[in-house]
Image 1 (cartoon, rainbow, N blue to C red):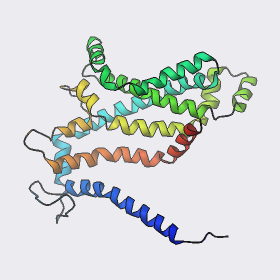
Image 2: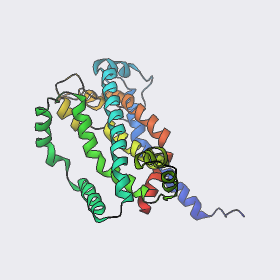
Image 3: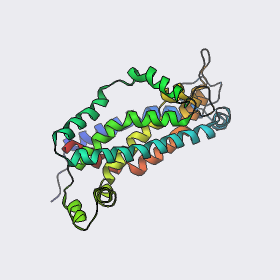
Image 4: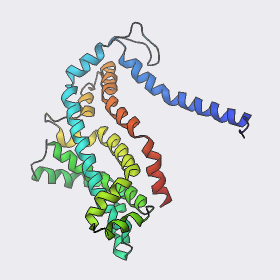
Length: 274
């Protein structure tokens, strides 16, 4: 039996369509400005004919976006892999051990979400300087891993608490140790929440501006957001070039997002149930 199509349903659909159009306005403006000529005086939502692709070529060359995107990709990929490995391994005992120290440790880790990152700027910068890592992508990678682990550990722990112990117990009876059981049995079951961790951390790290600016400033290892910022000056901002650079830099992250978006709801659902 099919549900009746009522005015309430129509109103909801119309409201959702309207909201979708509202959210599309900034994207249309971004793409439109990137196709305008440098001397265009029209508004961001007014279309110029004919559109030009020169801004993309100039942004790519002047900002050295090829090298910047390569640095962003390396930093993001290594950071996300380390976050997944450390967070999943840390969450496993926190979720499976029921003793008091496990609960206290979990609370301590989650407490990292409450500490503003600005409080650690000076000591972290001094530490990276003493380790001779300023200007190296490893400084940004280490900062990213430390900043993103608390939330990732939270997601993994909540998801693990919803997983039954049957598979692990069967693996232990077959002679698997705890580490092998985690790698071969448990971790494959964490695919939904791993997709969530990948998406959230990839988007955040890829778009991070301040950390690369602070630790990579003055070096050749700049990232895409910092490279695009080079088109902004005190008196003149080259908006068509800036927006063209933004379009180029957002394409890789959109590919990752659409490839893994189905895992977001599953991962968050597991965390919310916990």
